[in-house]
Image (cartoon, rainbow, N blue to C red; front, side, top):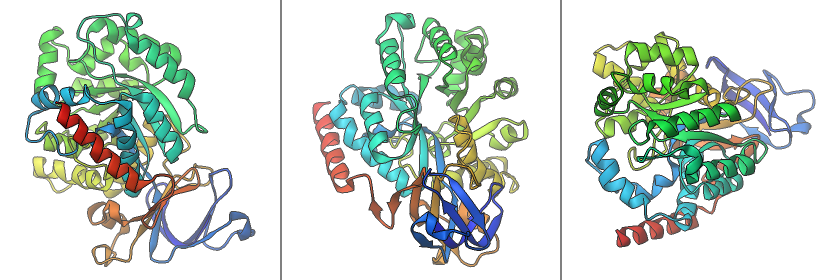
Length: 432
């Protein structure tokens, strides 16, 4: 595709107007310039970019995509009750047949709102991999591990599951699907399996996803269980931080935790909508950024958000700390956009993704600027983070392939996904 006469954000989110951007057959950005390339016919379709913005797609750094089934199900409860009284019993009834349409619906929602890749922590992993393959999106998939019995990793079904997933799917679909290890959290696992999984991830050279310090109760109870160690300090002692880690939430990190995570190159996946909805708190993201800690943005699951609209979380992330700190100066629009794009890609180990630059993968989205809420323009980056919404996305491209365009889902039967997800949800609720 050749985008013609379109506004673009460069790698630093500086605006350039009336640009040409060429995507070649390898799925990479091959040309950016003020005028047409010398061989425009080599790029195929010419896309009229007038009154539109081309920018890097969003990378959702923390999701539980099949929890689309639980959208609106468990409401107005604190995290521990929400999880143990409502979510876990519902999940115990879920089957592959339930997860398949819910996963398709979740991916369709992400594509509609400009997400090109996501890090997913859940179960039913063969089905999730199937949907990643057929839909065209990118994903770092991890199979969630919880263990309350103190078992060794080799003695649990989780080892066989992970061995299978790594063998069958790591690097599949031209590298769109990567496999990470996973520990649900400190409070849902015991030390033997934590140490074993950390060692397995280290030996395999793979990343790891984990929930960390989401609530104050979780944080303080961890210290009581482990001689004063915070979740970050405990995970470091168990070797977890010796591998690339994406730590979801991190609402209650202490100063030493920040330094530990920075030293290990870990990524905070902040989920502002979920954390505020569940009353978990607001993490001090400006402090993390000032300390040099990498921050990425996630939606969490639809049971606690309740959507996959990254633009909504982007907006909330910008405003939350200003409200809590009573300080109107906080994260800049450019920082926020980097958090939602390049930082998420880097957390997934995708160094050639997340930027609109020659040679990078063409993981791109187009926003329609011809709307009342996007006018007038003083600074387009400010408009995008404060005024735009996921519904402004009119095209989503991954690896140079258009997956969503002008209301059409090109790889997903959206009507079937919606119908079957509702039917699956109703069936599960009838059996609870």
